View 1 (cartoon, rainbow, N blue to C red):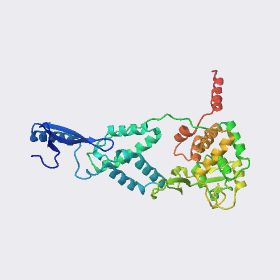
View 2 (view 1 turned 30 degrees about the horizontal axis):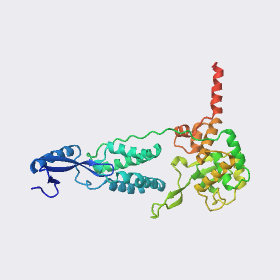
View 3 (view 1 turned 30 degrees about the vertical axis):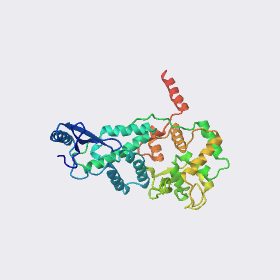
View 4 (view 1 turned 45 degrees about the horizontal axis):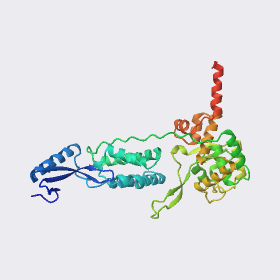
Length: 371
């Protein structure tokens, strides 16, 4: 007679059917295998052999085998909470709740395979997510899988992850005429916000760094700006309400982002004009009340529209600064440090764009060698 819990039963056609778990679908749904026999004993013998074959490849551990992947994701996130910056934690938390847990959280860890992750990747791309976004999601997943593998020593399946390659988009920069037009606009009826955008154009500051700058960070005597903080609007993970966010001022993007930037003479004169002689005041307001990044982005959109400039975002200003520096013959190592990059490769690959004038000037050099 069949025993309770064995999942072996007699069919209407008289045969015995035995079920066993072969694996798990992307949703976490169990995938069953089936064995049939003329008798209960025959069906049980067949299913026992099938289970043994599976266990030979992936033996079930004594512990943790009852937990689904969600358990390990959440456990990993709690470990990371005290190791990373709050902005990084919020990014991890968002990726988990929005992408990884809905699709993979119901799986059992030993059921995760290369094929399953590949299917997960394709679903993300089919949803219209950018390749860079999918790369970020897969990077987090890879870290969690490494953490989970430690909980199943010697038996966790080998999972290969291939990352999608997106087309590299050429960043928007202002050409010389556009830059002159924009600077002329900003210098007309200049207020604190226009002053801040001009300063970013003269220094390559990121928008969060600009918003976090106080006048105590500016030394007119030494003609420098000290960058040591950044401002971000982050999702408030401690708040239960949907869409709740908060503004946070914290350390910059990386250690190399903490830097001292020399000021040009024109930038010094601009700062002297707006100096409120209050060290605690923010540059963008002249008071101790901050102006957050999305307010600056709205202002920038208004200014560029009135100038007839299309497709300009705040990062356009940073890219434009880097390109002008290269055109002026800037030494790349110095430029990399001014931009706050970890190495010169980032500066050259992402922030330096040759204008048509620069390309033409280099091509004209061929005349000297008879070409």
